[in-house]
Image (tube, rainbow, N blue to C red):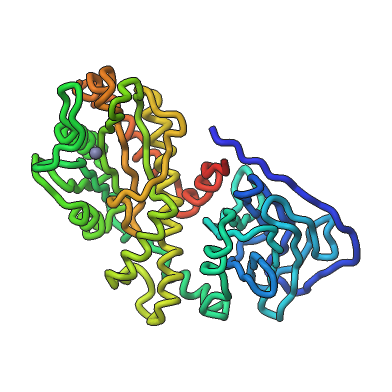
Length: 408
Ligand SMILES: [Zn+2]
C-alpha cells in the first residue's frame, strides 16, 4: 500500500530546556514527504490539544500552539533543530504557565493542508500531532496566514470539543446510498448500457446486502427512475444524520475505450474550500457550536468538522478500493480527490464510487451483469462492515487516515 517515511533529523546539542509540571513531554519532531509537500509530526508522551497556523510576519512561519508541554527531545536539548522540505528549522518556546509553542521557519510560502492528532496505539506508543504543508504562491500564503481567533488556545479547545460531530447514538448506523443520475439525466451511455440503470440496480443490490446484516438503516436518495438535483441528494444525507454517504456511478472514458477499472473519489482540497463557503453561506451551523457567534470562530469550527469528515471519508475510500480490487479491476491511484457536488456536505463522510467504465466493453458487460454487480456490492458492503467494526471509530479513523494519506 502507501509508504510513508519520516526523516528524523537530530542535530544540535546543548543545555536542557525543561518545564516542570507539564502534562506532556514533546519527545520527537519528525519530517516526511518532499520539498513541496512536507509532513511535520510531533510525538508526545500524552494526548494534547493543539492548533497550527502560518504567519507571514516577522518571517514565514508555521506555528504550533500547545498547552504547557516539556521539551525532552533526545539530542535537541536546546529546543532547536533543523527542518526538512518546506521547513528550514524549528524552535521550542515556553510561553507561559499554560502554553508552549513550536515555531517552524519556512523555506517557501506554504499552506496547511491538514492537521490532526493520532492517539497512541499498538504500533506506536506515542501520541502524534500531524501537520501537512503544501508549497503555494506567495499571494495564497499571505491570504491564508495570520494569528487565528480566538487568540486564546483554551477557548479554541473548548470550541473544538463542541465542534466535533458525533452522529447520534442509535441502534443502527445510517447509510445513505445515492444512485447517480436518473429521470431526465441518464448519465453515461455506452456499449448499450445506461449508467442511471446500472447505478440504480447496484444501489438496490447494496441496500439488500446491508439490510441483511441487520446492522444498518439504509436511506436511498432514489429508488426508481426519478430525477433528483445534486442539492437534494446532499440534503437526504444531512436530514438522515447519516453516518456514511455512498454515491454509485459508472464512468465514461470518452473515445478511449481501453481504460477500465473502478475508482473511489473523496472531497478534494478545492472542494473542501467550496464546501466551507457553501456551509458558511447557507448559515447551517447546526453541527458546530451554537454559542459561537463570531464568523471567524465559526469558520475555524467548520474547517475542523470538514477535516474530520475528510479523514473518515479517506479511510473508507481506501477500504472500498481494497475490497473492490478483489472482485474486478481498479484504476491505479484508484483513490482520487475531486470537488464533486454530492461530496460537499461538511459533516457526513462521503465517497463517490465509479464502478467501472461503460465505454470499455468488458467493464460495461460486467456492470450489466447482476452476478458481477452482486459481487462488487458485496465488496462494498464488507467495507462498510469493516469501517464500523472498529472499536472506537472516532480514534481509529484518525489513526488510519494518517497511515493511508500518502504524501506523493
Ligand atoms: Zn455518473
